[in-house]
Length: 275
Image (cartoon, rainbow, N blue to C red; front, side, top):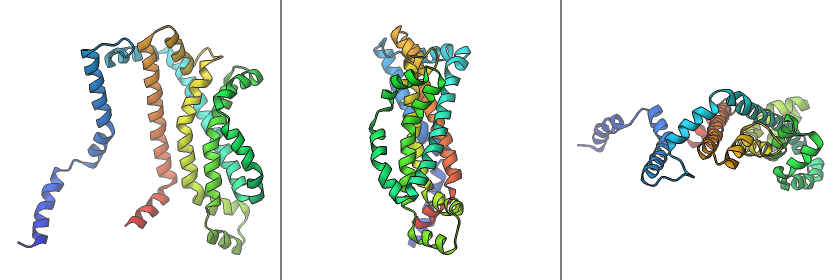
């Protein structure tokens, strides 16, 4: 029997054993979390520990704590501040990045200033902003912006700098306006790095959201988790930490959908190059 015949005989058998793509992806996504959850439950049964309650205890505390009025008092305001801060950081970072990346002398002038402010930990700004802006939502949003704008800004600058010189010369030859250059050449070329910067800012934003609410606050996830920790309400504290993880996963999924929409052409180009 020839090799092609053997291959044709084996291919249907191996293909029939493969799971559907959606089920295969789902198992890859939840397989490890399920294993870790099973090990956690087993350890809670074998060696109970008050500092690490059983999963069912935390699940019960989760429902009692966050389902109801606490969602509107603590969760919704925190998420709103986070989304506003991330959105403003993206707008500011992209706008400044386009300007700085396009003007060489301006980039050389402001790079040392950028490096200085980027090195300042945003949590250190919390007391200063509380003195200048008060303890309201504005100060908390500014803290989020102060930490999340840098990945977007610096990635945008690098994306603009990496635009192909041939494209720049072509735009000059066709006498494209500044707006046309930004829209049709610079933004598409820099989009992959811009999206990478926004992706980095998501986790930073969640951290700063919690930190900004731990002091000088009377509501929010950071305040509530700190309250549970100080009052030794361990299951409730863990439920808040898990809620933060769920928010992070939700943001990551939404970002992936947005990235597929914005960078659909880029993914197609990479697949074509690999083919």
